[in-house]
Length: 110
Image 1: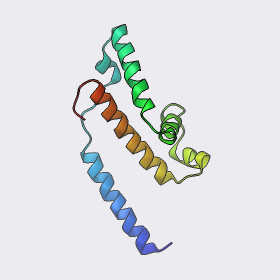
Image 2 (image 1 turned 120 degrees about the vertical axis):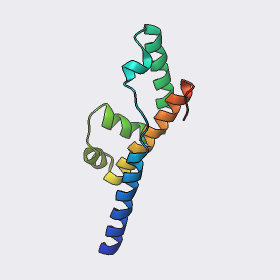
Image 3 (image 1 turned 180 degrees about the horizontal axis):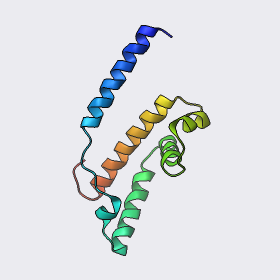
């Protein structure tokens, strides 16, 4: 691998990470967002089912391994024979897509 290309790409990625970290919007704990009633929980479950159904199968698999099975990005990359970078990018894009789906379901801004 060309060292100059590697360092250039590393600098670009570090810059993008910094920019992304500045764009993080406010978050609310899930329990605060849905309230305490059974109907709110049912509504949230329905929303999450729809949001997950909108994902492509590979993204859903990667998201589930990371957030439901507690795999590390490295473990996912090895299990699925892909790079850790692709795992990280897929997770980032999947989280963004899920956020948009959930916000649109509840009538918020995406």
